[in-house]
Every structure is written in structure tokens, then in C-alpha cells.
Image 1 (cartoon, rainbow, N blue to C red):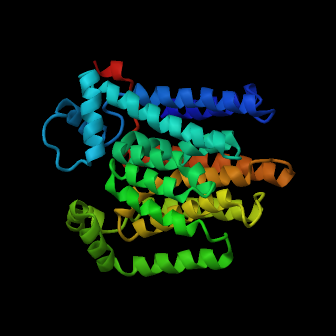
Image 2 (cartoon, rainbow, N blue to C red):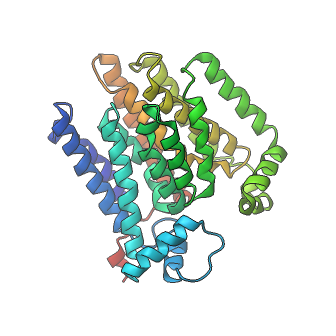
Length: 351
């Protein structure tokens, strides 16, 4: 775990050294350097880092065999990379590069606090999730990179990106919901609406599994597994953390005008994150959908606190960093099996 703590410290130090708030060049320099650090750790990890990594490692070794469980896009990716090199480490390097580049790109394009965005990318476990859930991570990265399109009203392009992402993980298609949602301004009534929908779905697990069975047939098998129940520990803790962040950011952060489409997109992505986490308390499989939405929350918080121009905001940002860092440490120490990224090892350490 020490290496992850070093990583978030490096992100903070780079923010100071580069003078990220001085101008666009410094901002770009910080994002590039920080993303290189994130990429290096993820891309050079061993197959033992991430619960599902070994599964994908073995799939790479048998890329030309039939893998009915995997989506078409992921299979083509395995075979294309396999044609370049039979070494599965290339898969980890390539997917890490794609995920990190997409994250860095949208942080640069967004009018947010880049240090806070990348700090939360790690401490809110999105980074760990991407190292574990490779297919969802690729799909999520594609959707993340398409955020500027939706923010600028290019809905068709965003829809195409979501559909493309679903070629790597079919459940990514749920992110099409952001297109109509982003038309709604962030209001108390909208937040209440999310709460009502979340409660209704939480009380209707049979309806949820019926919907999954009809639209995502292969995932219906989870209804007979531990994924059919709720997560009594992880989901409530993470729901509380996500809800706290969105409430603090919404109440105390600097908001844009009501017609700011960019903020609306991130707000609704963040609300979906809270809803998915809450539903995971009752139906565990919803936890996997948070891979698509967790970075929206990091961006939303970083957008609301893009300028630390008052003592209150200064204290709140440092409080957010402290609380999420403690959250990260507690999860890594007491529940390392959630993502399996602790202990960390580089690929050469297992040779």
C-alpha cells in the first residue's frame, strides 16, 4: 500500500512544483507528469495486482480461442495486441495507457482543479477499480473521454462513444441515460427524484433481475450467486462517502450558471454514482456499475472547488483530501480483497 500513498503524495508535490494554477502550460505540464506516474504504476504491475487481472492475462494467452463471455471489442483487442507481441504485459501497458490518457484528457479539458481531480481518482478507488476490472475500465475510459462532447451538446457523438464502450463491457450502455438527464438543471427536486427512484429500485429486486435477464442475459447468472444480495459493508461506507462529497460540493463549492451544461453532466454522473452505490447495498451487482460513474464524482468535486479563494474553501478542500485519504487507507488495510491491488508488485518481481 505504501506505493499508492507515495503516488498521491507525488500528485500533490507535482501540483506545487509545476505551479499548476499559474496558467495553461503549467496545468498541462502537471497533468502530463501526474498521468505518467499513474500509467507507470498501472502498466508495469504484475498479473497478481487486481482480482481479475490474472483472468485477462490468461485470456490474452488464449486470445484465438473462443471466449463467449467476453464482448467483441475486447476479443478483437486481445487478438490485435497478441499479433504484436505474445507477452500479456502488453495488454496491461496498453489498457493502462488508454485509461490514463482518457482521464488526463478530460481533466485538461474540464475547468476543474486538476490536482484535486487526480487525487480523488486514486483515493476514491477509481484507479484501483480500473486496474482490477479491465473491461469496465476500458469502457469507462471511452465514456470519460467523451464527456466534453456531451458538455458541448454533441449528444450523438456521446451516444456513439457509449455504444463503442459497450463493445468492451455491455453494461456501459446504461450511460446513455446521461443524455436526457444532462438537460435537467441541478435542483433539490431533481436530487429528490434520484432518491425516490433509488428507493423504488432497492425495494424491487425482482424487477431489477428481470430487467437484467432481458437486456444483459449473461449477467442474469449472477442472480443465483452472492451478487444477488446486498453488500452489507462496502456499499454503505462508499455510499456515505459519495453522498458526503456531492452534498459538500453542491452546498459550498463555486457553482456555474444554471445553464452550464458541463456542470450538469458531471452533477448527473455524480448522482448516478450515489444511486448505484446505494443500490449495491441491496443488489450487489450495482457495485460494478460504479466503475462508469465514480470519476464523474471526482470531476464534479474538482469542478466545484476549481478556485480555492476563501478560507472556508481552503479548509474544505484539505478536509476532502484528508477524509478521502483516510478512507483509502482504511479500505486498503481492512478490505484489500475488494480490488486486489494490495499488495502491489511489479511484473519483474514475479519472474
